[in-house]
Image (cartoon, rainbow, N blue to C red):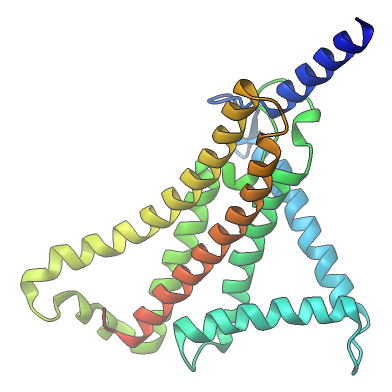
Length: 247
């Protein structure tokens, strides 16, 4: 009987940890603005992880790389390959931006899946991956839009806006609408997939034994990485498209 009660209590604690609170947030007032505190906290953790990793990678580079240096060089080469494939020969200045987008989203998604955020109790809401908040995904998408316009304007000046009336001025409203839907698509694609993955795990935990949701959680790690790659690839493609001047 004691073993059974212990097992029930353990499963109950796991269920509580896996629960998702929807629509509840811990708010901070900063400079007259109301912000989601839990998103800032988890974002700072993700940024700290990336900064520490960057410091470790650049601390003592070797001519013959070690295992750790090999890993960081592989990540850099991967990001450069994505940028070059989508942007073209002028990809160099955009590697830091594309890399920042990819790494922030990747580490955010994995932190939400691997770190036990829900053990930390907040007065309202709960800690989760930064990308689990629509405001974060919208901000990332808007940054991509700013980079998209900056790339086109820096390459062609005001002549960049001529693309809106090509191949015919009749398409002007559609071309303008296309630029507005790009950040919207990026934002909702990332937010929707991350939220859907968490909801699937919560539903499975509530319906079936824990042994079934665990493989789904590992699958979520894979899909989280894919979402980061998709976002970074599309961001690079949009930048390359604006520099080339054709659709």
